[in-house]
Image (tube, rainbow, N blue to C red; front, side):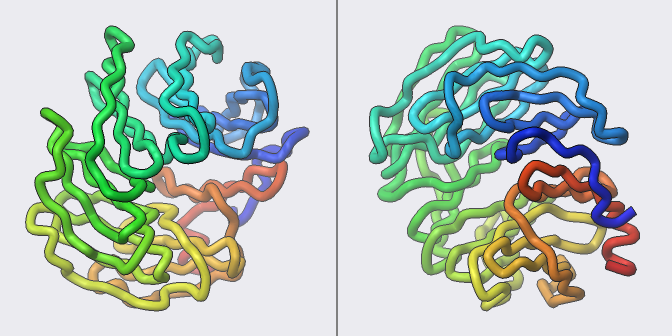
Length: 283
């Protein structure tokens, strides 16, 4: 089915992620678990003291790490209770921008170039200054791959948290990243996207004026990339080989992502589910 309503909640959905067969949503003060196939609400907990627009989270096995302005919460995935809280900043000049994790650490970029590393076993925090501008997005692999305000793609070595490579891929605000094997796909507020060799940082292909306004990657499906521009109310399907446009679909909101053969979307209080075979063939 295309654009099928999966579940409607009482409050607008701020963020949505999936792990296994469960969707995890933030709506108002609550964290909510939802069956990803049926839309049945499995569990919900009001764990936040007030509403906030700044929350964003990642799921790491049995733990959720959730940013909230300058705070980072560690939340048990089974109970949805907060186990730990770190204050990583103090005001608008030091709030948390992006999150990532690996087996040993949680990584949080801090506005204006700071970078915090939290050791999961001990809770110890170390803060580094690694970029002249804020890092908006990161992907964790053998290295940390990150995009910043200047439009640079950074390669950061985990030992010592040092930038070992840097490439000016865009003119400003590299805000969205995808990693597939040895290729990094980047998207920028300058309205362009690029396909970059992960090892050399050489640009394999690029495309300008992808949308008329800001956009982000929803993910990769088979031979296609999916971008979404909420200000334009559109999503576009691109051939990932050469970044040529395959199709435009007149629909687009923040928080869409691909999981397997399914596209999940947020629109106000409602979560939608679409089969990508049908969407790309007929949507």
